[in-house]
Image (cartoon, rainbow, N blue to C red):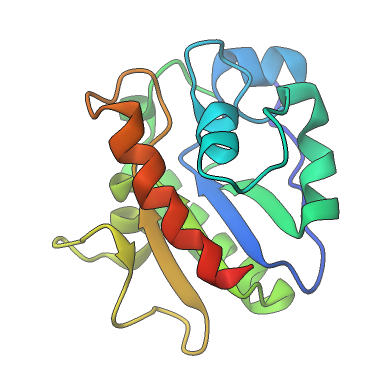
Length: 166
């Protein structure tokens, strides 16, 4: 299986960071391509995109000032298949990407992603008080996976908190 390309550029407003690509994303080459993943719906309903975009349009997020990457590049069926070593190596690579591209905010798409990155156990939704990289806003939002049991409108409300970084 293939990893999928990051969509990064300098001066991003928000960099979205997921766990890792799904099998479907690996097959298609697009972020959040699994039909059960609600990422594109959430971005639209939160007012972050002008319409519900398709996974095939993921590179167009750069035009809106949004980037896409993952903490681990290896595709898996489920995030539980990712090893501690992969997370540790991925977190270090992610810190380098964030330092290089200097986005205004980094949105971690899932508490678990942020916990692996920051090594913090207690994490709340929204902006984090003590960022790992000083000067970079770290924002934690629920995972967009269809496996998440939160109601979509509750998830969307948390994502609306990203408007202050636009």
